Amino acid sequence: MSAMLTIAEAARRIAAKQLSPVELVKTHLDRIRRLDPGLNAFLLVTEERALTDARAAEARQMSGALRGRLDGIPIAHKDIYNTAGIRTTAHSKLLEHNVPTRDAHTVSKWADAGAVMLGKLATHEFAFGGPSFDLPWPPARNPWNRDHFTAGSSSGTGAAVAAGLILGGTGSDTGGSIRGPAALCGIAGIKPTYGLSSRTGILPLAFSLDHAGPMAWTAEDCGLLLQGMAGPDPEDPASIDRPIPDFTAELGKGVKGLRIGVVRHFFERDHRASDATRAGIDAAMDFYAKEGAEVRDITLSPAADYHAVGYLIMICEAFALHGPWMRERFMDYGELFRDRVSLAATLSGPDLIQATRRRRMLCREMAAAMENLDIIVSASQPGEAPRIDSVPKWANMEKPSFTMPFNVTGFPAISICTGFGEAGLPIAMQLAGKPFAEPTLLRAAHAYEAAMPWRARRPAMAD
Amino acid sequence: MSTPSIDEAELNTMLLRAGLALTPDQVRAILPGAEIFRTMIARVNAPLPREAEPALTFTVEKS
Image 1 (tube, chains in turn orange, red):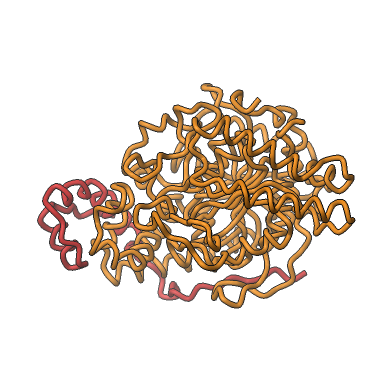
Image 2 (tube, rainbow over the protein chains, first blue to last red):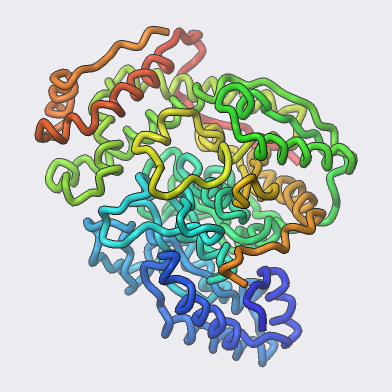
């Protein structure tokens, strides 16, 4: 049996009693045993828990009591998601032996939906700061080429999905930590609208920028996983209480009539992306236009404006959280985390207020741009994955991020693969939608993915 | 947009004020990042219109 199913296909076979959840999870556990020693995607494999979950799913399958399309699906959680009775470390020495007593809200929701948890996944330390080689565990490696970076911080999830160790997993995204690894690992990852999915029980990095979301091989699978995550949570002050739509309801409806705006200056002038990345976006826009979408270029503030606002707020919010530990246990953090977050000390109160005032203006700008659009397009990453040993310490500050604008504004955004670059590694584009318009965003992403036959190509190590 | 530079002594003073008592080597390791951070700080301090204020809301689409 191939382990390289999508969630949609596995769910269909489980519902038709053509696929045993127990056999499926055994296949994935075997893949983890064989492949993960070269990937470092997992910090902890919870084999007994996985088999218990899978047997329960199989019992429901046999009795006709499946809980939905996530029932029996092998998943894992980024190791900043609290798991009751199971070590949750944030990939940090500071929490090396931390065992939470409660599941994160979203962990509970996936478990209630019948998802089978295989373990905890590598992250950059406290969801910020990698790739680091001075932590208790090594960084995750890119399955397309293990000498290369996964991006982060949801690095383990990106690697594990791309290598077929799991069918989906959780990520978190404060400045691009879902969309970055999705892009470099050649998978899909969606940062939902701020407030759509609960942050309760997820170790925070920056309160006003943190988003919880899923990562999987396809946009459709992301929609299925998001269905199991989204919803109000009274314990999360950012959580919004509104009806949750069917995130896959618009899939297959095509893109005719959708209005698409391309922020070309982001990836051509503000931070010039690679030739392959730009060509991939151009080809995707040709596809959308041919399928009946209205495609035009739009102009926003420079990407550096969004990046500066987001980065300053992120560092300050992170220091507000970590300051007490940093004052006492500075050297217990990895170099990248401690040196980057220390920069908060150089920011004044008025500087932070100026950043929040500018954030307000950028939110208004983005909302105005979206009034006559359904989708905004940009790059996800500037190019293919660099070598993991050649990522400069200050790389995430030197040039503006393509993903940060949608953390600053809270708009939903997804990264999907647009093919492969000169080195044979994945390239990607980013689609963003209106707040709470995830069904339309997923519709546009799915239409493109479904039309690209090369989406069947998996990393050679995963075959 | 001018970007004021920062030196090791100034950075150390700021770190101490934040409660981070670091060694000279540790301060030097942070200095290149502080220079880049300064450009970001200068960028957010560019003039803003009076209506720019920190309230953060967005409008939910009406179906």
